[in-house]
Length: 458
Image 1 (cartoon, one colour):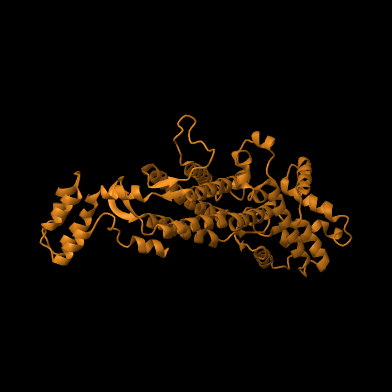
Image 2 (cartoon, helix red, strand yellow; image 1 turned 180 degrees about the vertical axis):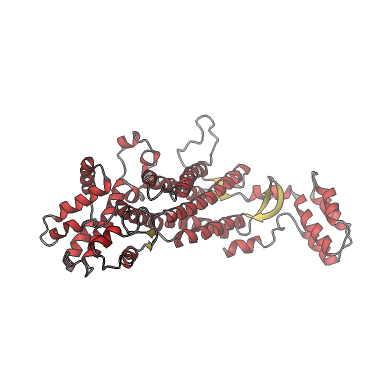
């Protein structure tokens, strides 16, 4: 379903142009076709549910073959069917009504189903169909596309955490040398953050409603007052695998979409944080990047191998996050019982997920090109003996030596400390022999606490 090469060159959005092939997995879900397909599914399932309700005596129950034909039509909806909906919409100027008319066209020549024509879209407002369609689309995008890509990214990071669990690295807090860590432990930090947010995202319910024009079942009760429409609505929404929303205005309040947006934004923010850190580590020489034959890093500087995957990922996560932030802030707000501002905003959901998907792919690809540079890591550590001041003053505190922090501050702050000067200072301390020996044997590369263990545990 990707646009042709000529069409892609004229695309207004890069998701349908430069990056078209990278978002193909989302195209059947969030495209206009995907929205029409989801609407048709909801309309068909509503018709089947009505036919199974004994109180709706004017609508004869469908036999199994009729139900199968209806579902086959919904499941097999073609691009040509969607084009017919758009053709009808040019007359109706109403997209959901056009879907209703398409279904009626397909049923009118079916001897068994034709009597059911006027029960298509029965007692429904457009938002009964739309909110359920979008909930189904979001669930599919999350479960079938985004969650697997996020799991792939986490698996890549976990592999790096384990592979480099013991590889020491100089930390930098406020950009200054700080207590050492390991490369693996820094990757493990990101694994833990992403897994927590992934669990949140995957556990979020997808709310839905089907309760009429202002959420009170007005038309339903007028036609069939004896039916428990709230219970019927709940059974129907839950039959779609969604979470029933019992209290609404004309629209489902979109709090669930806001929750998904907030979760996706947090994931994107963590990924941006990772992109910037890895970009910096590459700049420091802690990582090398594999070179692809024929690839150019700069149009004028032949030596360059730029961290383009991390820059591309950061940019795309930024665009996605801006949209997700807007969705979370705007969609739960609607004037009185309904205004139309959500309609155009909801159509941009696929754009946000598309940029997130590109971000995941670019970040995973970039990580796959990295190889650690132990020599450069070791050189930085060996030039930062001042980081042992924390260990020395803490041992001094344990054994009651006077003003340990102040002594180490005078020795190390803003001054170049060598291996010799640090060991000379340790040698002059009135410490137990075993404690002094541990400090003498310590180097910046071995002063990593439980970093390696933590990295392997993730």
